[in-house]
Length: 489
Ligand code: NAP
Image (cartoon, helix red, strand yellow):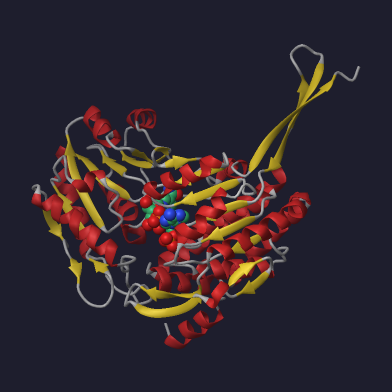
């Protein structure tokens, strides 16, 4: 990977806000800097939006809404499809950009381009399938018509861990439904969203339909937008505490909300599991994205008779992981996003070890310029350890033994979160029981990754509200109208 290619790519990324179809500087020409977490090197300086810029972006989305809502579904579908095609042409650029600003290994970044792109294609197909209903009322005195309508201007807030997929997962269904949007990516990883919006512009998106604000003051810029009575929908992906705060703000305008929040995924291994498949699944569920995924397995709940063998095998696999900058050959684990993430991981591991857990591999941060934490395996993690309660968001595989199925279910459900669970068993009936008993919105049964554009992604309990992807995804941006007309006869 040449430094020249990176320099050229970064020079081509837009550095201004995109509002009303124009790339413009932030008010007061304020800027923020983006850094590479693998070496903390400076990457690029971009516009830093103020609350006035946020208002201008919402003004543009409000103005563009009536005409975008009135376009045909086919027209909207084709813009999304063209954007998908353009993304395929530029897929290597997008992968490299994500590796630079976020740190994930290049192979994983390529995977995210494929996954993130699918939302553009999927919702280009769903756009033309929004249906209503027509039928007689039970009394036979009238006809009931049920129709779907775009909810209106939307505010989309995305996190840093999947810079492309979290943006396409919101923008694509919103546009397919006929909504206009303001999107605000995380300060740490804004470049991918800016480049994505450039693709939408090239695909022929009318001015004002998508507006981007990048900012170092997300709270100050977002609150007035959320409290503005013209906004009709808030879609947020991020941490549960921030989501709760935003829900309070959204309550003022009784906004439609979608909340994709934190997780604390159990990964249950029964003693009848195929251990080869299980270890493959465990490596994916834990170390993909350097453990920084809401779907990352957080607690490995393993039946006592196979716990030593499982720990031995995952430790061996972890020994084969290679830490480094995501662009370097053979690297499988990149840096954590920043020093706070390293400090949090360190504190969780130290707490678990202090309460009696053993470290079979890893167990500390790696010094140097980048924010790296060694991939780690902990065994015999004791009840009460913080690592079992908190979302780790780092490359630490924490193992808790269990004795019987009831035990496994009790431990797995003992969390306020309910995003995803993973179960490994060769017993069909046990797998079916787990579908019924685990309190999560998604489940991987003998697989370590569940995400798919065609599936309804979302959580139970404090992991969120609403679904992204699947047939459900577009309905988050539609509102229902029921009309009664008299019996025509
Ligand atoms: P975060 O701190 O909650 O930030 C998420 C987004 O919210 C960022 O764009 C952030 O911008 C913005 N934000 C922060 N404070 C805000 C405020 N007061 N008002 C408006 N916006 C605000 O979460 P994160 O650390 O970036 O992401 C990790 C979390 O996301 C984890 O908990 C993970 O589980 C969750 N996540 C969930 C899913 C899912 O689908 N369920 C998917 C991916 C990630 P700034 O960073 O610029 O402040």
